[in-house]
Image 1 (cartoon, rainbow, N blue to C red):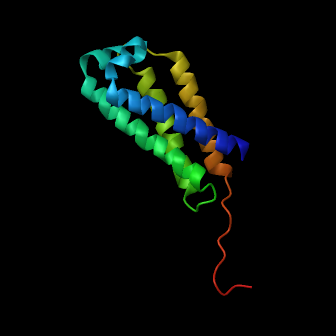
Image 2 (tube, rainbow, N blue to C red; image 1 turned 135 degrees about the vertical axis):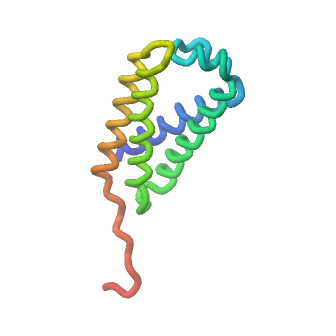
Amino acid sequence: MKLFYGMSILHIGMEGIGGIVACIRPDAFEAIPVHAEVARNYPHNMRCIGVLLMIVAALGVLLVADAQASNAKLILAICSFFHLAAVWMIAAAPSGADMGGVITHGLVGVAFAYLAATHQPKAVAVAGSK
């Protein structure tokens, strides 16, 4: 459960803060080589990415709020998919691959996939059972 909560809280902080910054000041991402061209030439696209990041951060909030929910495995799988898709997006970026970002997103995607495969939500008590 430590990995579960650690990943979820890290997820909320990183994705949420990044999303808010991308929405408010997309030019802040000009300092990051993999995002510089998009941030400079297409600030609207950076704002759209910011909205997506905040949605993904909200998934982390759902996981922390109710770790034993019946849909926790689905949420973990969605988080894994987003991070593994980010590996491809970062590696294929026109400004060149940021290998640190590729490795980080890949590891986070694998961690969420592991959690999705091994997470056991509590059994729900059925009314009338002994």
